[in-house]
Amino acid sequence: MRLFFALVPDTASATAIGAWRDRQLPGQSRPVPLGNLHITLAFLGEVNSHRLERLCHDADVLAEGSAQSIITLHLDQLGYWPRPGVCWLGPSQWPERLDDLSTRLGAIGVAHGGKRSRGKYQPHITLLRSCREPPPAPLNAPAFDLQFDSFSLFQSRQGKRGVRYEPLADWSL
Ligand code: ATP
Ligand code: MG
Image (tube, rainbow, N blue to C red; front, side, top):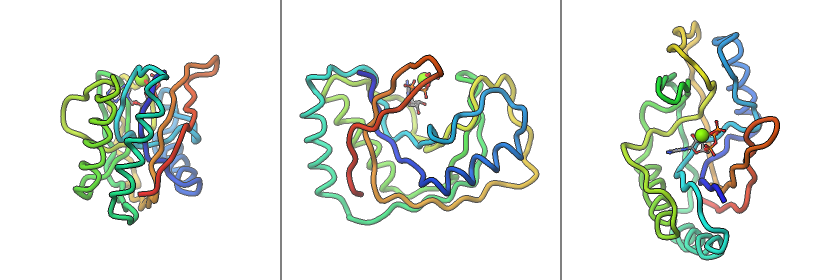
C-alpha cells in the first residue's frame, strides 16, 4: 500500500486557501480538490500491508512522547517546483518541532520498508498540478494561519477521478 503521513487543514482553512487560489491563480493547470489539500510530513511509498500494525504502533509511541501541544503554521509563501510541475503554498519559517516530526515519521517509515526521503524538508500544500511555468505573482500575498492538533496516516489510491487519500489512523500532537 502507498502510504504517507500528513497534516490536514481544517475545513474552513482549506476552503479559504482554495478560494484564494482560485482568485489569485485562475485558469492555471489542474487545481487540487479541496478535500485533498494536505501537508505531507513523510512520504513512505509502498509498504507491505503486513507492516501496518507495527508501523502504527511506532507512531503511537512517538505520539505518546510528544510535547502535547498544537503546531501553528503561517503560510505566506507561494512556491513552484518545475520538475513535478507543482505550485504550492507553504510557510517561509516553521517550528523545529515540525522538522523533528517529519524526520521521526520518515524513520518509522524506513524501519518498515518505506522510502527514505532525500533533501531538506519544505512543508507545503500542493495547490496546482501540471504547471508548466511558475505562477504569476499573486495580487494578494498569501497569509494563512493554520493550527494542527493531530497528524494522520493516509493510503494513497489512484481512482478513476484522480488520486484519493484514505485516512487510516490519526494521532494527537
Ligand atoms: P499523483 O501522484 O496521482 O499526482 P499525489 O502526488 O498527491 O498524486 P502520491 O504520489 O501518492 O499522490 O503522493 C502522496 C503525497 O506524498 C503527496 O503529498 C506527494 O506530494 C507526496 N510525495 C509523493 N511522492 C513523493 C516523494 N518521492 N518524495 C516526497 N514526497 C512525495
Ligand atoms: Mg505523486
